[in-house]
Image 1 (tube, rainbow, N blue to C red):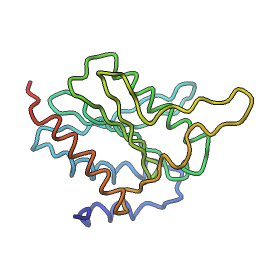
Image 2 (image 1 turned 120 degrees about the horizontal axis):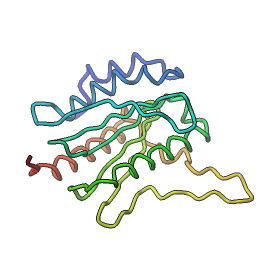
Image 3 (image 1 turned 45 degrees about the horizontal axis):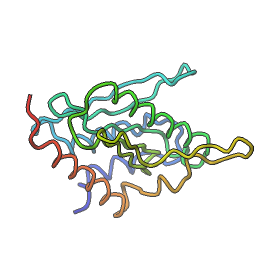
Image 4 (image 1 turned 135 degrees about the vertical axis):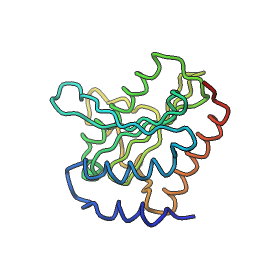
Amino acid sequence: MPWPEFITFQFELVNKFTTDEGEYYGPFNALLNELFPASEYYQVAPQFKRIAGSIDFTLIYLITKRKVPILFIEVKHYVAYDLDSSRKAADDQMRERVLDFTARSIPIPMLYGISALGTRFCVYEYTPASRALTPLRIVPDPHLVTDTAPKERWDLDLLEPQGEARLKEVVCHIKEMVADLHD
């Protein structure tokens, strides 16, 4: 079943080539609140984090149920998709966020993270029991220029059928994992 028209409309209003990632915050907020309604005890909370070594901030959406983090999404503008350094920075930031979450107990079998470059996205999966994180980190070659965050990782677009299906699959799995969470 396709996204509701009010969701796709909001994403279509964004100029795909803007370098202002803030233009995506409203559409993502609407999408996340549609997927994780407060009436089902989910909370979608935008959080601002300082980027290491910069005066800039980045926004992540943290989705929780009964105070348990179940998903986080970091949003960048679409133009970042074409820049190797921007994809590397996005990948590094996602890994840092996972590391931050490991400081406390995660009572679910998997914590999902999504790196969104405009409407293109990459799904990160962290398994607390094994401390495994996918996609695997690509280690740079000490002598060659290495693309450590290839475009193929962001091969899904949430406005296209495959991307929509994958995002809904992630949401369904999350909801199954947290169905029995209690205070």
